[in-house]
Length: 342
Image (cartoon, helix red, strand yellow):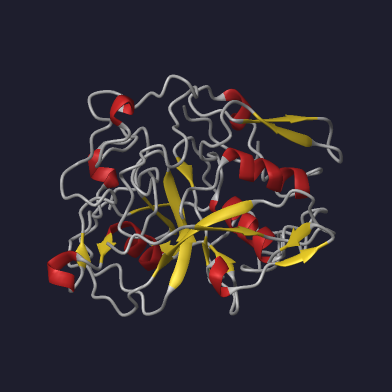
């Protein structure tokens, strides 16, 4: 397989406040979409590498409704990356005009980070390690402090300073936040339990269509639209660069209510695929073949590029299933080898 850049039960989404007031005064919220229908059949669609049979998940889980945004990732950096021991920040985020969205100021030990432009665009220039460390931070309750045990190095994944291998870490038992594996990512994007008379089936695209989406910003409220390259880029004009705000294609969600699983940025998953970590979904730069359910890709877990981001998954239930406890009026809820590619 050619190694390339990673490129209705429509469930209500839910937002969760994570971490305690002792840990973060402005906790990040993650909108989630429940993915039910456990024990669904596999998709027989042949992938670009000749494999097939993806999408089987035998349990219910929740996945991020949107990709992790620049605003969310900036909050993460400000919480743990004053020194940035493990390179969570790539200077390309302030330099590459097509996607730039985070600036850094100060010196090591007192770094601070700010959003450039529209913070609702997805973060890019993040490695698989960066994404895994973000999920560890969520798992640990969004603490502040140096990158280490209890902040970024333990939790959903035991990383312990690894920035070069990335092929041995697996999701820890009991993880409540994690990077979706390939099966979870695939099901959330392409499976629809209402197809085939209620027996379930798969769409070719995560926009609930078997035809390639349109890519017009002007038509973003129509069905079957996405941010990708098709006889030209999808340029929003108002946000700058090639990225569009998450969820901007308001009527092009998957059957489970997720947005941008096709286009905008490809997303890491935590499955080991050949000699790398998996990623799917295509991006603003790729054509429709990368967006399709058959577009199985992977990359070195150290890779960071303008076309790849991530979303998270969780086992935390919907708000109606948990009690959010009020406390004092504040909700207590639950350039290392970096490549500049425009």
